[in-house]
Image (cartoon, rainbow, N blue to C red; front, side, top):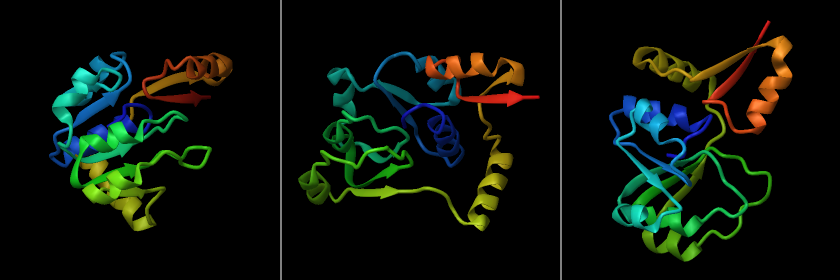
Amino acid sequence: MILGGLGHFGVQWAKAMGAEVVALSSSDRKRDDAKELGCDDYVVTSDPEQIKPHLGTFTHILCTHISEDFDWKMYFDLIDTDGYFIMVALPEKALSGIPAMTLACRQIALVGSLIGSPRMIEDMLQFAAKHNVKPWLNKYPMKDCNEAIEAFRAGKPRYRIILEN
């Protein structure tokens, strides 16, 4: 699970469904947030020693961000045979560098999701209410919208910015 605007929801949903959740991040910056959200473990993906114990152990990865230099192989190596790589990130450019042989040999399903049907959305909202799945918000008065934009650009929000009148 990659922590961020969508990832912090994913952690809460997965925990509410009884899953063991491991946060994946390129740095230690969000470790405390991951623990507070309920993650069972935290892996800094830029540290090969932290990656090693998790190789081939994940049944699912929920991907909420794809950079231009995304390391598909590293993420796919974390997934067990017959596992799922679920993309809810929508990159601006076409996907490239996907190791087709790894997908085929390990039978990893690469799937995407944008939004569900109205019925699915209703079910999701009921589940969220029942299991206390809530966004982490940073609220700004509308008069401070420029400050909110600067905070967003600097990567400061945890994890949603709301402008209020």
